[in-house]
Image 1 (spheres, rainbow, N blue to C red):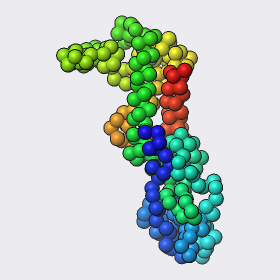
Image 2: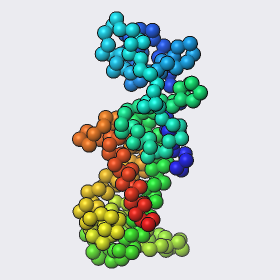
Image 3: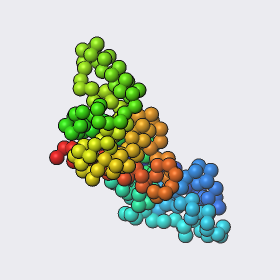
Image 4: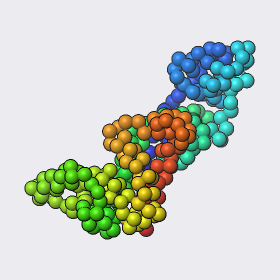
Amino acid sequence: MTNGCTADNIATANPEICPADDVPTAADWLSERDYDSAPVFEDGRPIGYVTRDAAETASPDTSLAEITEPLTVDVLIASDSPLDTVLEALYDRPFYYLADRNQVTGILTRADLNTEPVYQHLYTKLSQLEQAFRKTIQEHVPDWRETTPLHPDILDAIDERLADAKDAGVALDPIHYAQFSTLVTIIGNSDAASQALDFDAGHQASSQLDPITDLRNDVAHSTPVIQNTDRGLTESGRTITHLLDQYQLIEELLATHNE
């Protein structure tokens, strides 16, 4: 899955070229399509890009050339960049272009993170994390049923899934029938399990893992993982800032577990 989640897989391929010759037309064209940016071509070759913000704020007598920005290295991203690189790049700026042999081959935006390659990659990572949590609990909280304040309905659901597995002859340890949110609750209530994952204590684990649970639910139900294309921790909904932090935490937890 890792190799299937690169900038090239995520980006929108072959972005439309801005056809306008003047700023007002460019502003209208970008607004009608809800584009934040579009490449500008001359004689069949890309000479730069124009942003809707620049087009809408420029005076009508400004030439398109005056607001066209060059396709310099800071707005280009390698097509084989993995997801961690993509997230870090999109944290710095809201869009990038992909280019090959003097042609623009794609545009990558924060909204493009709500795509199938990202969902598949995150699903794999979160599944690995879920298995890591189960092993951590088995090793450090073997008495989790007695020591964790879980609602009786949760325990009943675990027992039902375990009974079904026994009837099918495929039963595993009971912890394998606990849902992700339950695993987080167990870890958050155990300093031993939390510290095994490099948290200082259970309360720290809970505060940092609750957003991971929300991300896992969004991935499982194919709901947007980016809910706000702005950057910042104070913005409503999950932003690139939140997703970057959560992805880095997942990677750190998996690395700690594998040490």
